[in-house]
Length: 183
Image (cartoon, rainbow, N blue to C red):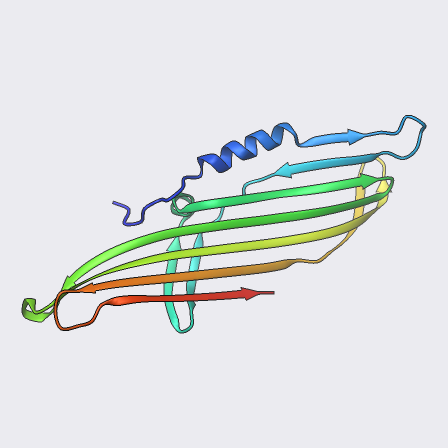
């Protein structure tokens, strides 16, 4: 039994990708022989698991989640590449946004049945990766070769929310920790 609950399934994401794929390629051409611009949008799905340690402000947790479990916790995602080409030039933007959420509850009793407690942990992880690029075609024949320059920005945000309820001498309460890293 999976102790996590899925808040929003991945089906809306798959439906959106299928709809966008139908609009994936569009070309505009000038009738007077000028170079034409070509525009292309390609949605994609990046399938990965998670393994490592995550945390914020000194509170950490080990993570080992295969892809099928990551998909169960997918709260939202967008992945796609937009490219515009004219002549030998190509300009593009690759964007990836993923939000995962999960929650887990656990109850326990103290020694000799003295006191009890219940804890509920909600976790949300959001990752964004943006890559603008420009390229110039240096070979155009049976094989095409572009020289490309790009920059990449990555940001990961983590939110942990722990709610404890006690039935004994220990106090309950809520503790929330947030953290963000970007490079």
